[in-house]
Image (cartoon, rainbow, N blue to C red; front, side, top):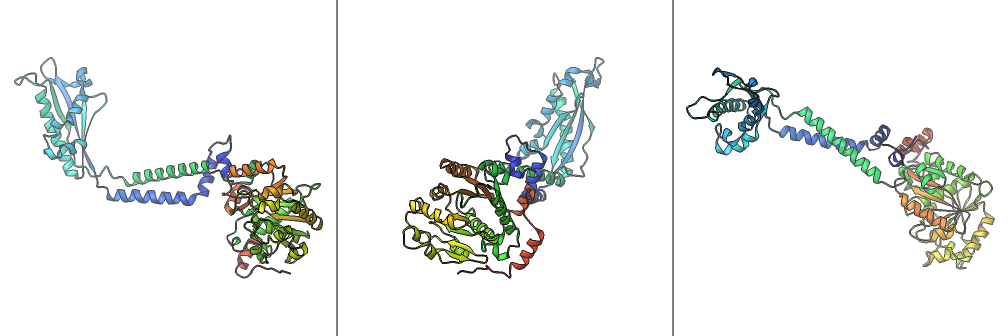
Length: 478
């Protein structure tokens, strides 16, 4: 099943019914809010709109026949074809001035509509007004005055008989129901407008949104396998390590799945040193490094986690360790490895903090001493995981990727843009770095269900919810 984002952005995909259903399900709150605002506005306008009543009068044209009497104008083709002229005359200023004062002529002209019944010489005049009695009175007065006006203008001479006669067929009656406002119609129109505007805006936003929204899209844009899908948990920002839940959560299960996939990426070329980075800051690379190292240590691996983010180190805060002395001190010869490597937790995980923040991080990480240090570390540990700075702002991660066995790229759901991901991949490819895979981070639970790639386990999630208020981060520093 395709994800919502793939349906919207696929090269040959059409905007089908399934796409709209997913779009509505994902943004139902915004659609509901749009409907409430639109219906509320329509209701307010309808309540405050004055009622309007319409009275209708019907008139018939007739003319003299050869015997000198009047006959229906059906027999006179020229009169039938010119009936529209009488309709225009009915709404003229000269005609309307005969039934109202000079101040109301313009207003009444706007409220009079005249139409010729097709194929006949019947003329209907409709007068609208807020008062039904006044509407009927004005319509009847209009008919009477119009008949007199036609009688005057259709005389060849003042003393001759008129050539055309107007007869009132149906007098106007007092209307009982207003023609406007129409509450049901107004609400339906408001609902339709709200839906059109809401869906148009959502489709436009979805089309213009270039962020990564599915593992398939991440795999396609990075041209590498998606090794992990890490779900979003509200408490993860305050407690980023999965040990808080003793490994019984959907997030912990996602990292175990990432660990398993990492073991299968290259049996003959299993990376001994792995750089984990992202395109930009705040995409979850440090928490991914930390939890992947924990799950590997739980599986019996001898793991060293190196904080190589010499600009904004995060691991000391995550693990609650001392970070004043570390990697930078080893690189400048002020300390030995056995003096700065710390152990954490049970089973034991080995940590190498960043140490003091230097003025020249890129030069230190790209130095010959750093390469020698990596060779020494990969000989002592099963895997060395390196938390590197983001790729695009600085060159530190690319420098490390050039001398390590592999790179894992972390992307943030709805945060990492396709163009940023492509630039990062191009940057790594330019130095012949081996991209072992990608991780999609901060994936909301609903997106995982809609996209067809779940990661939740009901028992673990419910147990985690019960224990969230009881447990704290379990650490042991030696």
